[in-house]
Image 1 (cartoon, rainbow, N blue to C red):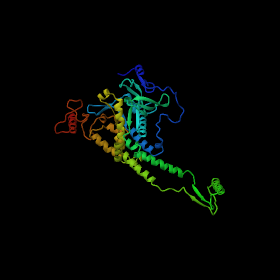
Image 2 (image 1 turned 45 degrees about the vertical axis):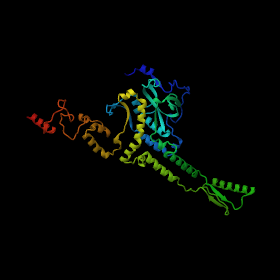
Image 3 (image 1 turned 120 degrees about the vertical axis):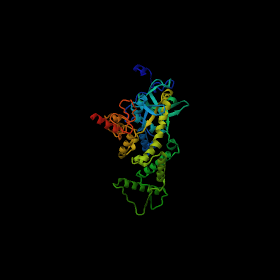
Image 4 (image 1 turned 90 degrees about the vertical axis):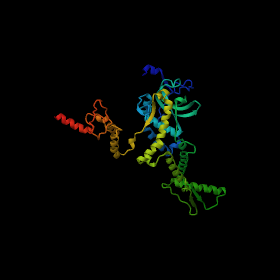
Length: 433
């Protein structure tokens, strides 16, 4: 039964205000004025300074493009219809005041890649989740687990009421903790990704040294520098050359004919770049991606392999944890679930759409209007466009769909040995007589 407005207000629960029996850290006031969104996920510095951030962002975008919905199943676990609940609204339209459903999923995946796990926390609910497991989720946010306890976790979460991040302690049964399925590849201390990050940092350090602007010169003077007087004379000679280079427009200086200058900042031969290339190719193979996936030139087979090996395990991990934490046993017994749908027509070239549309409609898999929606056309007003019917066959004007049982409205029984098209011709002739 739908709750009234007063009942919803009385039963409303917020993760930051209703912390009893957990500790209350007081009101720190509100925060504002920053040009950076305080609720935005901030990646680790070792990820932001490398190509890893681009790979993680691409994978997070592909996961966010998958529709995750609250659904109803039949007795054979087949999809029947969507459940238009507040949880479904969080997953599709608005997860919180700052994020849409798609932005929330991208935030969750990026945080999971960065930390190895992510906590999805219901922040506003109807019903107290600390007293009962039967509650309705109104808003949710992603958080970072800062401490692990036997039956609860300490989560760093953005408080939209104050505009700052706070740490709160919540029981595990109400927090969906999703671990990265690719943890062994991306987050282990000696994993391929972490080794690649260390090599990239070393390569960046060498590039900074070579581009720092230093000349790294050794000046060989024509006399022995051992006595204090000679050392002072050599130091003065070094300063003279520095002043010449600094004051010259093109960086030109002169020396004595007896002096020799040796430059040290020449590139040192090493195999660091080869190691980076090797680790990058190994990371691509372990993640199931290619360069074509990143630059958008991959073929259909490569993209299908990428979605099945990389994207779907991540989406399944998120969905399975949401089912376990956000749906009660009663809801699951009523055949409710959370599942994801991927549009298979996004990877199909335009020249194959006509062939696929013919096969799907001819085999009565999709209606004509459903295929028109795929190509971005408005539905047809023809009643047969919403019927699973093979348009290549002439079923007669009085038969709305094939397989109509005798006695049904609009159904006719064909005469043995005659097609429905022949019956139409006979009926026309009878009417003319």
